[in-house]
Image (cartoon, rainbow, N blue to C red; front, top):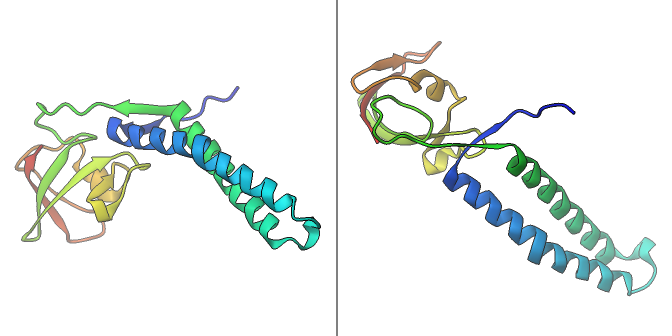
Length: 153
């Protein structure tokens, strides 16, 4: 058997994925199966658009369940040490970006969401900041953008 790579995730992210998995594999899958059965009872399946739509919905739910199961089976929880003075996965970092103060949290790629100010440790910014300390300044490769670390939470 091939060893699948570990998927780095915070405890909060893992909890959200578990909740989604339980909801999909319990309530939503059952509802989709019932919808397929009701549509099948309507007769000729070749021209039954309700049946095809219900089947497609069930297939999407099953695919997401399989994806979540794979993630949950290979998740590696990262525990952020809040006492550290270095940027690490799980750190919330306050930076001065060319005069603009920004705050974001470094997370694994599964959890990254720039709209929620969560950036991946695999992103250029995340890679540049990992291991740095308050007062350090990093310049992203191929840019003039500088990030000065003001605070690590």
